[in-house]
Length: 66
Image (cartoon, rainbow, N blue to C red; front, side, top):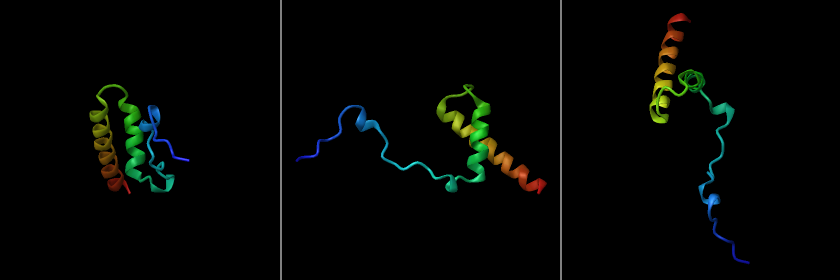
């Protein structure tokens, strides 16, 4: 039997494995919460950039306080 090529929406589905919780860094954690705080104030690309900028600031502040 010949395997049928995916069509329609099946082609758009990502084949990548999800990120394991063990691979999430402190920077990712801070960026996730920063992204929630940004909300809809920026486009998707700008929001992600802003979230990681804020996460970097949080990491620097964390280093000062430890």
